[in-house]
Image (cartoon, rainbow, N blue to C red; front, side):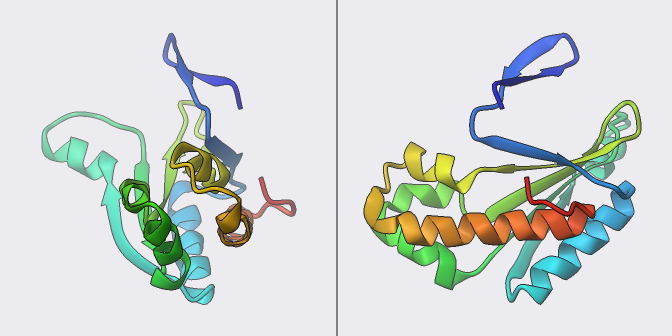
Length: 147
């Protein structure tokens, strides 16, 4: 994706993959958590940005970040380049647009591998993480084809 419009400012979205959900915010989040756990991964944290905004009397459409993964998948990447730990564990943002449409966004693992110069030796590990992430998003959003 080359760019997206957020308000009136064009944002660079290199490395960001976005997929529409067929479900509302709550159901997408519930499905996401269930699919992650069914895939044998751990949900480490959930950050509800909209609730945090409400706590300081600001409005924000539903926006939640789910942080998840497993050591078996991420550790080899960090063994090669510890700095990739800034981008791990994996994160998926589920947010509602002005139109009410729910979107799911995540960093493309191939982009992360390039960013951290992991090299071809880790390509199979990155491909496995990419496939797992695409499956998780596809099942969470009701998509028949992964993004």
